[in-house]
Image (cartoon, rainbow, N blue to C red; front, side, top):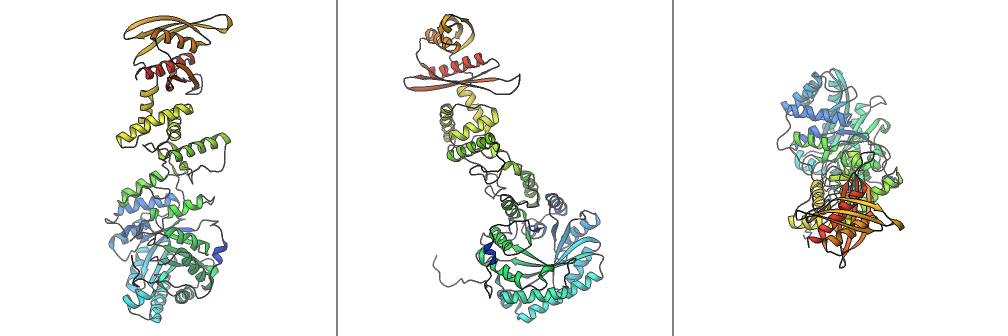
Length: 554
C-alpha cells in the first residue's frame, strides 16, 4: 500500500524528555484493577446483557477479586440505571468493593447519576470530556478554554451533588482521547480538575489517561504517562489510571509500559472485550505478571469456568489462541514440541523442581485449571513419538520402550493423517490396544508350566490354541520367556530373534497389574507386542504372543 500522505501521526510527544521508565526492567507489584466489562464490554455486544446476566457477571467479577467494578452509565439508559439500583437495594456489593459509574459534564446527567447511587456504600463517579485536537475541532468546535470550562463545571457539580447525596463517593476524571491531546494541555485540564477536588491522603482522586484510540507505539504512551505523572498537581494524592484500547493490537504493551512509567491503576476487561478492537485484556496482563513471580491479586485459577460464564452471558467467544485462556494455547501438535514438553515434565518430576521451566509452556496449565493430558499434548498427523508416548503414559500408565514408542508413533500418525482429524486420548489408547496389547488373532497360549533343570536351563510345557485346535509342546531355554519362545517357534514353524524385553507395574500396591513389552526381529524388521496380567510371567508371555501375532499378520 503506497503512502499517499493521507495518514499522519496524530499523537503528541511530551515537550520534555520523559524516559525514566526505560530504566525499570519489570512490573514489581500489581496495580489497582478496575473491571469495565459491565460498561465498555456490555456496550460492545450485539445483544447487551440482561439485568440477570449483569448481576451474575458482577458476582463473578467479585469472585475473581476485583475491588473496583464499573457498572455502567446510569443516566444513559433505564437498564443501566436499574442495574445500579439493583446492586445497591439488594445489598449485592461487598463492603470492600467499590462500584464505578460514568457521567458527562451535564447537570441533568450528573443529577440522574447521583440519584442512581443513593445509599451506595462506596462508589467512584467518573467524569469525562473529550480533549483531543480532532474532537475539539471536528465534533465540539470549541477552543481549549471552552473545553477546560466543561471539565471545571463538571468537577464543581460533582462536589455539589456529593454533599447532598447519601453515600460514600470518590471522583475520577478522564481527558477522553488523551492520546490525541497535546501533553501540556492534558496536564493543564487535569490540574484544573485536581485543584477543584482538593484530594487528600484519605480522599485521593483518580486521573485516568485513556488510550481512547491507539495512535502510537507503546513507548510513546509510556513517555506521555511519565510526563503526566511528573506534572500533575498534588501527585501524592492522585491515583494515575490507564484505560488502554487495542486499535493497534498493543493494549497489553501500552499497559505494561504505562505501569513502568508510574501509573497506579488499570481499567480493562476480561478477554479484551470492548468497542472496536476492544480494551486491554486484564487476564493477559495479570498472568504476564504472574509468570514473572508477581502476585496479580486476581484469581484466574479456574479459567475454564470463567470462560463458560463469560461466553454464556456475553454471547462472545474466547478465541482458541487467546493468550493463556484460549483452548489451544497450551496444545502441542508438533512432534518436537511434544517431545520437549514431555521431557521437561519428566525432568521436573525427577528433580522435584520448584521453579517452572518446562519448554514451550510459559505457565503451568494446572495453575489455570487446565490439565496436561488433553490440553497440552494433542495428537494429529503432526505429532511425534514423544507426545504420543507421554499421553499414553500419563493417561493410561503404559511407559513404552523408546523404540516401541517410535513404532507406535508412526501407527498413530498414519491413522490421523488418513482420517484428517485430531485423535482423542481414548482413541490413541484404542489404537494401542488393538495394535499391540494381548493380541490373539492367530493363536494364543493357554498355559505354560516350567521345570528348573541343571545349569539354569528352564523347560516349558506350553499349551497353544491355533485355529480351534489345542497343541501341546515342550522346549527348553535360558529362562522362562526364552523357553516359551523356543516352544512357539517349533509349534508354529516360524523363525525370529527375541530382541527386546521390558516390564513395569501399571499400578502401585498389592493389586498392581504387570505390563510387559517384547520386541522380536525377523528379516531385519522388528515387531512389538505388549501384554498385561497380574502375574509378571504371564504378562511377558502375552507380550511375546502379541508380537508374534503381529508378525504373522503380514
